[in-house]
Length: 181
Image (cartoon, rainbow, N blue to C red; front, side, top):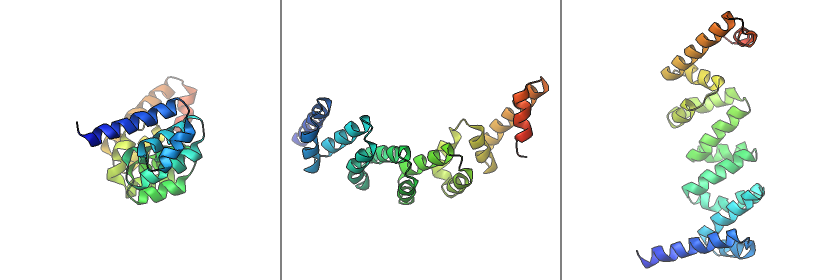
């Protein structure tokens, strides 16, 4: 192992230890001096203590520099903090994690029109995300956009709802009555 790798591991271990012992002042000083490991550990420490907005500020420079793990953390924290504008900006700049978190944020708030536009614009990138979504409204969105597997899943679900309604399930009847198309 090279000396550079050993030094990097030592910096990571030191940052990990500082965070684990709540030595946040020294951790912050190391982060301010350019230690990326200290910056990540400080951001994580802040997030663990529900200081998410501070964690966002700490991790943002690493995300801006293209660090993928930092981009993931930042995107998740931005979604948690209801900051879709920055998610949109980052997604438009090619940040995959921001795009996925934005899609999830829109879905969680039933902003299906916006989600439909986003998925249509980023179909290839979001295809996997959309395929993993269990909610019927999102399966329908995928089916409406031409996803054959989603069309099949939706047809099966509708068949089950019809069977349940025919057997007297009032909730299934109500769902079918409210089902568009």
